[in-house]
Structure formats: C-alpha cells, structure tokens
Image 1 (cartoon, helix red, strand yellow):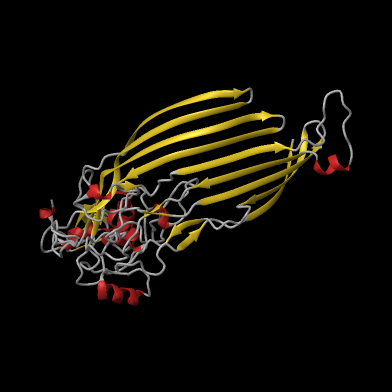
Image 2: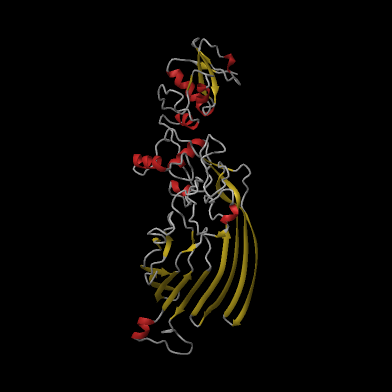
Length: 466
C-alpha cells in the first residue's frame, strides 16, 4: 500500500478512526490543509514535500520502526504497547484528542458492586483490555501473577538492595526473561456431583438428618514450568527448551480434585421459646493443585503432588440456638406479671453460636528453589515431607448475642442488643510458617504462628422495629 508514497517526500503516518478528524484540524491550525477523498487512505496535503497515509494509531510506531513511514502521530500508550520505546524518538507531545485537550489516561475499571478494590485483587481474574502488553507489564510490576525475570543468588541480593525490597522499575540487563501464558487448549473447569440424604422426624418439632456428598473437580487450572528438560535426579539443570526464555509458566487444565463428605444434623423448630440446630461434617478433599498458581515440585511428575487439598477440613461441628427466657411471658387466662423480676429479666433472648473445626493442611517448604525448577511460588519440599503433610491447630470459636426488647404498642418494639464475637478471646491460628529449611532438622520458626483470627469484639446496638 505504501508504495504510493514517494521516497523523495517526508512519509507521514496519520491516525485513522476516532483521532482522524482532530488530527486534520490540528494540521489546519498549523497552516497545512489536508483533504481526504472517500474510501481513500492517502490524504492530500498542500505541501509537495509531505506525503501521508492513514493507519490505525495502534500500528503507527511499528511502521516507523520498520521504515514504512518516516514519522507519525500516535499515542505514547501505543508506543509502549508495541514495545517501541527504545526504537523511536518522541519529537514533541501533542495534548489533543477527540474529546479534550488533556492527555488521556488508561484506568482499571470494575462495577461498583465488585469486591475488587486494589490491583492485587485482580489475581486470577480475567481482564478485558485493548492494550494487552501494557496491561501485562502493569500487573507484573504490581506483583499480580506475572513474571519478567527470576533472580537468584547474588543477582537477587543485588536487585533487592537496589530497590530496597520494592519493585524493579525496569528489567535487569543480561538476564533471560520469563513469561506467563495460558495453554492454547485451556478448557473450562467443571465438576461432577452425587449426593443422597435421609431425614427422620424424632418428635413433633425435632428432626434428624444424614447426607453424603461426592464432588469431582475436573479440568482445574494449575501452573507448570514447561521450559525445563527432564532431569535424572531431583535437581534440574540450567538448560532450557526455548533458550529465549528462562522459565515459561503455562496455565494448564490438568489438575483435579475429589471431595467426600458426610453430614449429620439435629434440628429443633421454635417451640416453647427454644430452637436449635447442631451439625457435624466429616470430610476429606484431595487434589494435585489447590489454586491456579500452585506449581508442582516436579513438572514431569504431577502424580506425586496428589495429596490432601489445602481446602481439606476433616471435622466441623456447629451448634446454634435461640432461647427466650421464660420470664414475664403472658399466658392465656392468667393475669400478666408485673414485678421487678419480669421488668429486668423479661423479654430477653439469647443466641449462642459454637464452632469447632479441625485444622487445615500446610505445605512444608525448604524456602528455596532447591530443585531448580524455577517454580514461583516456591514448591520445593524437604525430603521426608510430602505435599500438604502438616496440619494447622484446631479452631474453636464462640459467638454470643443477647437481646432485650421493650414492647411499644401492639406491634412495635425497641431492641437493646449486645453481641460478642470470639467471646472467650481464643487465639485461633489460621496461618503457620511453612519453611522447614534445607537441613535434616527443621529450622527455628517452622510451624510457628504467622496469623490468627480476629480477637474478641463486643458491640452494642439499639434497634426499633415496627
């Protein structure tokens, strides 16, 4: 197409589409008259030393680099998107657009009701964007499931010191980059389920039930480094299948999971001012990847990672009740009681919730890429410990709610409410230090608590219902 541009003239690339009219107006204000015939991509300029052609703004920087045109007008965002920052020279900045004279900004946008509030919340999400490479690099620099380089040893220490532990503003020269990409045949995950249940009425207001649930998760996502050569031993060599990259982290659909769960419950409907529910679940969950970014210790032996899931919780018991104290209740054919006891203790409801849960699996790690597989997050484990072979402590929690209501008229009432969460202020450990170390004995700090659930909270409220 560009053979119609004379070599003796200045070959100018102009943006088509939404920027076309404002660009022609910009040249008009500079004293150049540009006219365009219908269905033509070669505008006419009243200067014999300039010849022009219309391209999409997204492509112009590439055509400059490829010497198809000598210069062009495009957005800096498209220069960055095409990776041409070091290949072209910015002559001047023209702050104009179809809508405003201010520079345009690219933003991350989500619906108002979305739970996403920070860049890190996009981990594992699907993002629709026109500037794919720029978006990828932006997420990489914010640590959201993307990789530019993997630093090890002295290089890692130097990089860490140079940034004071922060994010590198640019790749370190001389290091082969790593990339993250999805498998071309990536399928949508799905599950197969089977269940049955029985229920028996023990009394008029009391029932017991038992149920069983089987769930098989299929085509679940997992990440694997596909750029390694298979090793004879537990440590991989420095060779790479594609020497252009250090690691190629590929999102695949080879993971699966299996859940077996039996539940038993006892329920009493409200009767004589009392109702309660008690349930117990015995279950086991197995998988070979508990999240999409979990990588195997050995990318060539996925079966070895089949173990209890990080989501496994073998035992769970929950009891909750609602009880209105039998004080001051009006009974048919009996006069209403009115004394200091009924005034203080009448119209009071109490509602406890008691929960006991077994701990969840913890994946013990050496804390280093001991197998040299390039896995990140780390996946190398101590020799005698399997995947998710350690369990966190038991969790126990009691919440309590007490309410006193004051009748107002025939239907309305005023509620004075006090609620306590984690009533006994138990320190429930929810995260342990998984780093065992590289020696035969665990290093200090292994399986020490790193995080606990919320401390006791007490809150009060005043409600009016009508």
